[in-house]
Image: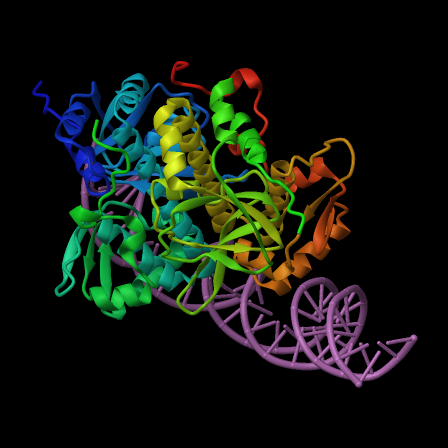
Length: 254
Length: 254
DNA sequence: CGCGACGTTGAGTTCGGTCAATCAGCGTGG
DNA sequence: CCACGCTGATTGACCGAACTCAACGTCGCG
């Protein structure tokens, strides 16, 4: 069988969008040993409490971080899309505190912790970039707490779509635009702490307001400025696409 | 005036409870330059969007991480108690994405980023411990999302009290115990995404169930096993008091 | 063509919110 | 020492956003 070759380029781009790495540091990241695998939709590929030996990098597809209450209600606490390191924190905390679950067919690259630790040890700037990546994940999480804790359903949903639009780099402020977002309404409910029925109703409202429409696997944003407004959204916490001169590098070149 | 001397010992203990550091590494942490200051209650001592040059370590008191919606509703996304680094992430991401606010009179130690970066650069194990600390903060945040997203008010509140009891190391499983928790019911509301009125009612229920009672600044837990049960609480995500042989050190001794 | 997963809609319920009054504690100043 | 005023706790009556339950529609697929 023909096996397409995957590499860590998408992840490197993610790092580069926030941190400044030298040519050789970048090259060493691309040279990290990795093992690609295709995972079917709805598969729990990192189980709760599993002690893992490698980190997972998303190349294609969509992955959710799932947690559950004792009576089995699900809460999705994070989404990981291509370029994201779904569990970079496992390098430093190998026991998984939540499960990783594919939402669609997903291609992941697994990189052994030992290799990641080695490169972080050799290059402080890489260690710094990894650490920073985890910190940005924390900032996103913190926004989710605000979202779920204090915003009503309509605002909450608008905010989520805004976050996804920015993370997918799909935003065209002046005109309507589209992006893939392959999730069911029930799964959106699990992200927002709402029931699928209510998600359906709120989507209807947003559609009737001419803000967006959403079908399984595709979002169409019809009025970005208005949607941002409704979602009380400001993109800066995502640290996406910051200007090159603002990308951080604290340690000196090695 | 007599000025009591404060040091980073509480923070070092926090690090030690999760990571393994050598004698000399520990000593260097204690030797970090720091500047103590006393902050009055209800003071915003790290403002949103402020680019800071030092990290804040809590020695005494209680600090909340505050965020707001556009219409001014508050959400507290994290609490920091003595021994915690309230914004260790600022070492790697200096622009504050949320405000730090004292809940009581608080003593903080400020340590310059440059010193923290230097020690992390000299000792990989320290860099690793800092990174791990941020990752644990993320795990706590992730639990808050589940709490606010999927649990009803009674369970949610019980979970919060359990988390605090463990983080304050106050738990005596077999008997009733107490700990200081100097917050108003309105502030608890801001942590849980609920109104003060409802917090009051739910506290009454928990009191009548013989689980706990709470007065301004003090919690009395009357039935820990039952409270844990109601709050669907498991402590492992907090990474508090893990056995010495399980504390992590990934890099070799330097 | 029939089944299963997902989306859509209506009717009725409930948990938590809103508004408002009252109470309790406490620091201040006369 | 006591009156005052402030902040926070408590309680009641009513309201409304989101939930529950249930029916029905739609689409893709074996």
